[in-house]
Length: 121
Image (cartoon, rainbow, N blue to C red; front, side):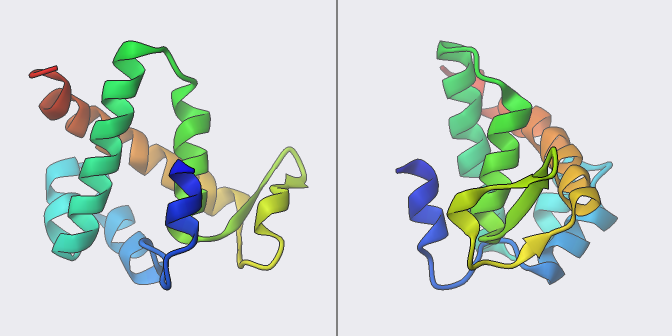
């Protein structure tokens, strides 16, 4: 249900323009969140904060969870071990290199956001 809601939005949260902005600023998470449109920044921060809280309660495979989150935010399918995710059959394809790059960016963003969100939990 968590991912399904994101996949049903009219437009993906992450489009090519926003992905390029994140890639250009990925070393500085705060800068990256400031340079994307405010609604995208809010969504990313909120979702990664949710993941941080969830990870504190039950240990999750963070990298796989973030991969799945990116699939939902881009409304795309990616390849993992040469198998595509079946629920994304009619959606655009993200190349594995691009997907790996986004995972790295989101892990940096996660570290930044998790410090902010988990403190009060």
